Structures are given as C-alpha cells and as structure tokens.
Image (cartoon, rainbow, N blue to C red; front, side, top):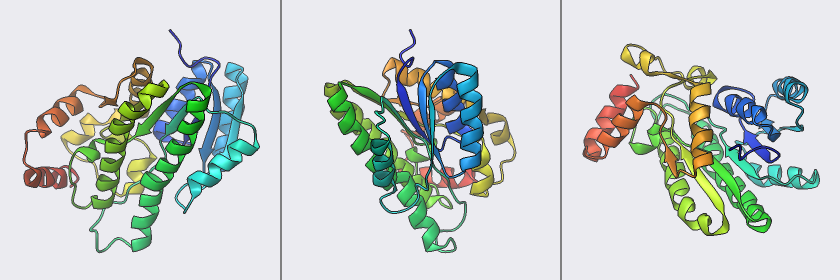
Amino acid sequence: MNKFAGKTALVTGASSGIGESITRQLAEKHCNLILVARREDKLNALKQVLETQYDITVTTISHDLATLEAGKSLYKKTQALGLDVDILINNAGYAKHGAFHVTPLDTHTDMMHLLTTTLTELTYLYSEDMRRLGGGYILLVASIAGFMPIPQFATYAASKAFVLSLGESLNKELSEFNINVTTLCPGGTATEFMDVSGQNITGFRRHAIMTSDSVAHAGLRAVAKGKAVIVPGLLYKISMAGLRAVPRGLQAMIGEAATK
C-alpha cells in the first residue's frame, strides 16, 4: 500500500545524498514535494526532472538551516505559500572530523544549530500542524554515531545522540495524535557528506558503506511501517545491538578507532 501518494513532504538537505534519494523515491510514489537546501540551482534542476517525470508538484526553497531561528523562518515561508506538510523529512546535516579544540568554535555552533536546534524547531512547528490536520509522518535522520561517544567527531556524535533520544521520545508522545515519528540511523553512506567531514575511509569500512538509495529505501519503508528506529544494513544492525553490552568508556575507544 502506498501511504505517500497525494501527500506533501518537506525534505531538508534535498539537493544531494540521502535527502536527494528520499526525494526521488517519494516522487516515484507520487508524493508532492517541498525541497529545501542552500543550492538553488540543484533544487531547480531536480524540480524540473521530477515534475516532468512524475506529474507532481514540487516547490523549492533555498534556505540556510545552520543559522539561528532557521527553522522558524522556513516554517513562515511555507505558511506564506499556503503549504501544508503531511510528511517532514529532517535530513539536512554535515560533520567535521578533527580534534574538538582545533575545530573552530563557529563550526561547532553552526553544526549544533543545524543538527539539533533547527531540527527541533521544524519538528515542533510542523507536528503542531499535523495535530490540527489529524496526523502525519516525521522522519528524523540521525546516525549510528548517536549510539556512542566518538572522539574527533565529538559534537556531531553528541548532536546525533540528541536526535535519536528526541525521536524515540516523540514516537511515544505524538502517537496519540496519529503522528508517526521514525528515527533513521545510517552508518557509512556514499554521499558528499563524507567529503565534507574530512574522514578518510579505508579498509573493511569501505566495504560496509551503503548507497544513499538503499538507506533512503530503508528509511521510507520504516516510516510506512510505523517503526520507531531503523538502522539500515545487517552489519550495522548487529554492531549496534552488540554495542549496548559494551561499557561507555570502551565505546569511546571503539568509536575513535572506527573513524581513523
């Protein structure tokens, strides 16, 4: 059963990576789209392809989500356009690999604005509308980094732990309003994200990397099934299940080793 046909989804970070894959797969399901990213040229090119190929309505909004009150201002833009959102895909994000004290403070705060504050603003505002509309779907894109402390990725891992905890809590809280909240926790994924993070992927980890299409498919399938948390990929599922039995201090050592 196609639960997305005829609905409207807002996708952040829609111009590349997992966000673009989710966008294309929603379009295939005949879901109308509101695409948000900074790169207007990429958004417009994607809009042209999807509207022509799938006969859906695509709205593009160029917006920097890493600034203060970015979520509030994006919400106001969609309100001004008269757009109701049935499905919210909180996907936008990036990471920087490096020592905490060496990475500029602005990099830390911008990352936190994007990964936590803006995500919370959008989730709050659109879930209020969903309550009024009688229900909806929210997908929060976290990471397996949210399951453990990771030196050299300290702020990113901490932010994703926040997203995971928020998503699991809201899955319970908002269910009474017919709002399903799913948290997607991918492992290594072949996207621009890896280039931006500055991480060097070698050895067996390169073989564990998933495609953005497979991660997007797993995420949307979990949303349709009403799952609270989804970790795509058998290897990552087993690893995260086993991690629960490992002491936190050892988890930090594992996390650091995994990113070298």
